[in-house]
Image 1 (cartoon, rainbow, N blue to C red):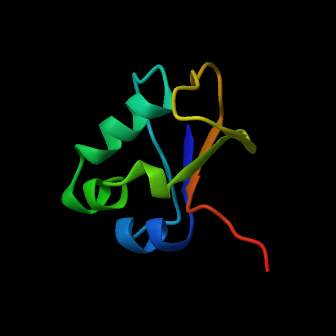
Image 2: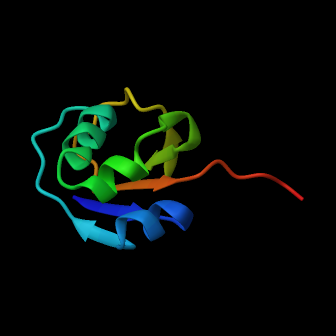
Length: 81
């Protein structure tokens, strides 16, 4: 599965995208797996209230099942201007 990181998440993790093999069943489980990889992932996901996620380009909550998804994206909340 392709995992995409945007804005300050990309800066903290040091990658804009990566291919991930996972046994996670939900996005929240995927976040837990990623957070256990290295301190930079843990720092990026330390406050999930400041992170949004999309599954195959659809905004979803963290308890959403991954199913057969091909892409998960993580990004900060967006504001209008």
